[in-house]
Amino acid sequence: MTDHDSTAEVPASAEDNVYSQGPLRLRGSQVPETTADQSLLDSRGPSDWTHEDPWRVLRIQGEFVEGFDSLAKIGPAVSIFGSARDQGRTAVRDTAEPSPHLGGFQLAQARSGGPAIMAVINRTTDSFYESAATAEEAIAAVEGAVQNGAHIVDIGGVRAGRGREISSAEEIDRVCPVIEAVAHSHPDVLISVDTWRHEVAQAACTAGAGLLNDTWAGVDPELASVAAKNDVGIVCSHTGGLAPRTDAHRNRYGLSAGEVVERTLDGVIGLAEAALDAGVAAEKIIIDPTPDFGKNTYQSLRLLRELETFTDTGFRVLLAISRKDFVGEAIGDVAPGERLNGTIAATALAVAKGAAMIRTHDVRATADAIAVTLAITGDAAPKHTVRGLR
Image 1 (cartoon, rainbow, N blue to C red):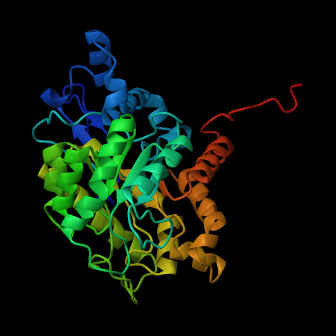
Image 2 (tube, rainbow, N blue to C red):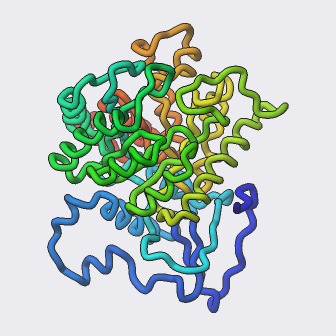
Image 3 (tube, helix red, strand yellow):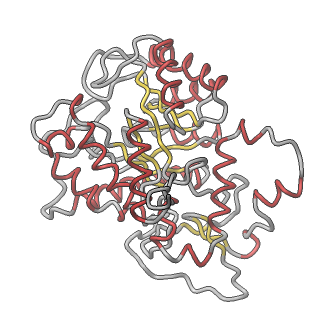
């Protein structure tokens, strides 16, 4: 594994011909002769792919971002592109052989110019917030989320916490009809499946999923192979060693209060390296510090406070903080239904610190929070400006 704490730069010369692509550093013959966007312009072929291949659209936009070499060295100026910032503490992986799947993809945002909004769609009967007991209810929830500005929908068939045992077959029966329907009705929306089981992941990919959201930190080692086989993305999370659907209890991460950050970073980078080794394209690897999972409230707050540690790795960062326990406990003894205001406060901070994706139950409120945050930081213009001009 690359030493992510190192700030040393690899020496480069004119002969070395070093080219950076996200968390990769390509050399010599590995440097691509052209980019995906230039190839597209040269081909002058049909444009149907712009509505049918969201990963390709995002990859091309990432190469567009990489072209601004001078801006890439000014972190705040390009913070709207999530963790596409050159800030020294980068987990660089030198490649021995070029891969046809490795492009200059930077997971920014295909349409709004800010972090991607991932809508939570629970195809369950017992999730802690907003369940959908039928496929029809889940599909309706997707429609509402997309109308409100979601760019990714994360469809899950098993609640994260304790509850009735759900077999892989039942999980597949819950999520796949929804995925198939969304893939047909919204081909430009990236579909994520929230699962830790490779059987479910494969069925979801066949149905049309493009992202595997593994919230249980690689407990099934075959999941990364499924992502590689199907050329889809994967989320690398950290749970402190918890088994799926178990709760954190007095988890400790060493004597130092900040050690939870280093342990979590080591965990997600380790899974990212394993995904690379399995053949997953680097631009499709996302890391998630995973607040609440294997952490108490103080530990989750510390992760959010030091989020730059993760955004500086070169991997895209997903933050799943919507209505979580640490938000409720920061306010007081507050139930999930009363945690929206606290969630929005945490979301604004995460956006300012460079999160590339925000997972949320409340798409419209999240979109508004992102827009205001980016306007305040100067990373995006206000969408309507007439005050004082008329």
